[in-house]
Length: 78
Image (cartoon, rainbow, N blue to C red):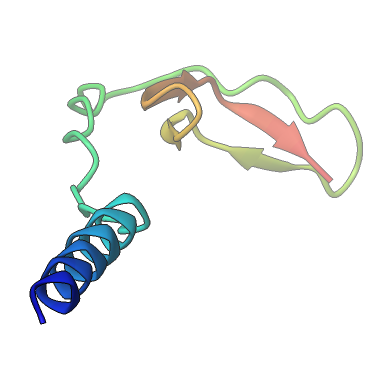
């Protein structure tokens, strides 16, 4: 009977060790607040390089790989 109690206690201890090692904890944290936008005002938009080009104004883009925002200057797209 004594050996059964020791065996049972060992099984419980071993099971708790294995389950603790396999646990995954995920903590969701919001990204850092974005930088302040540039002050509104007049800015220069160059002439369209081709017909039908659309100007995308400068803006910030979140870069998860870097863990920060990156400034993207204005540019033309098709």
